[in-house]
Length: 197
Image 1 (cartoon, rainbow, N blue to C red):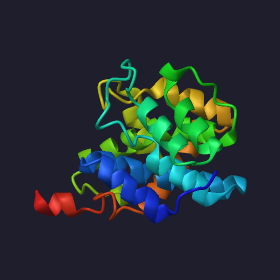
Image 2 (cartoon, rainbow, N blue to C red; image 1 turned 90 degrees about the horizontal axis):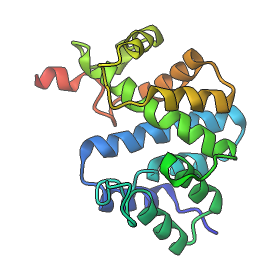
Image 3 (cartoon, one colour; image 1 turned 45 degrees about the horizontal axis):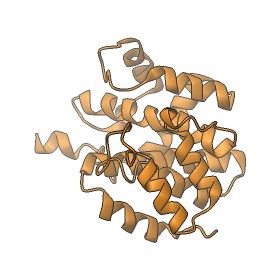
């Protein structure tokens, strides 16, 4: 089982995913996963690439109930490409409907990071500056309580992910937020959208 290079993984992602927002999501999850890999002393490339490709087939196969729906198509592709079982297992486990248990630290981290990046992005985009540098943990916690805000974000999944990792929610938000701030330009969350306004 061979891990692709970051470049190979990115190339595959851009072939499968045209949506800029989905590409930004993949980059945000990658950043959060790399941060957790460093925290736990794990393989940063494996964790980062897992985060990068976790939704590879979502744009083409969004119907999760279909036999080829997300993430079944990408799992078959990763298997065919001979990618590491740990990556495949984590990607399978991030989708609750597959009923694949999250037993590894990698799988637990992916599940915890995935949904949170969407909420953080939404919080950044409602700020007048549209700059993630202006987002604080307390801003995210405030919007967390407003269930109508970013209603598609499954807060229960994030809480479950935090419990699996045995990490405090505010600490988790802070870690992922800082990771995303580190790639603000790649996410278009560096204030440029306010200037285009």
